Image (cartoon, rainbow, N blue to C red; front, side):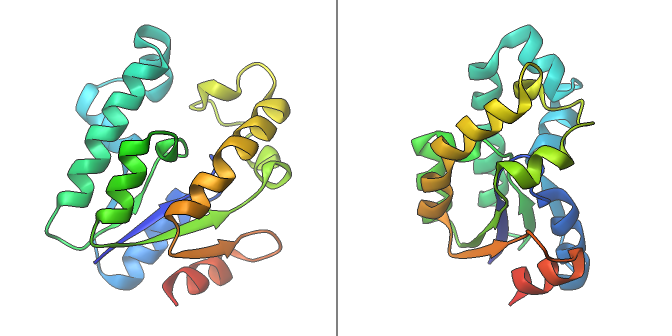
Amino acid sequence: MHLVLVGLTGSGKTTVGRLAADRLGRPFLDTDAVIEARTGRTVREIFAADGEPAFRDLEAAVLAECLASETPSVIAAAGGVVVRDENRAALRAAHARVVWLCAGPAVVSERVRSGGHRPLLDDDPDTVLQRMWAAREPLYREVADAIVGVEGRTLHEVVEAVLR
């Protein structure tokens, strides 16, 4: 069974996912990193050249591939993966445990200040994060088998909670 981490950008999916994969002895897949490796372009470059819809198409294809892998893996899904119905359906149908790393806008705002790879946060990060939270919170909840709050927890505590 795959372990899939979902949550807002900056919630810790990549960091927690790497540590969880090490603990479980499984491969780690970050959907953004897979997209960048496959296209030879950064997420920011894809957004700039092709637009968000094209990025979301790539994101959906990569998520489907990761979930279809027969090797149990830890997958850090891109923060916006839940915005498409097809991705939520794939997460629910997959042989996977989906864990929502729940970090609200105030928590991630501090974490993403220096995140140059987050093009959606370029203009007004706090307002955009508030909007993302309002739109995505019910979608994360919809796909989650477990919810792990990250606020006030150490990285070790979050990893332990994810692995329970």
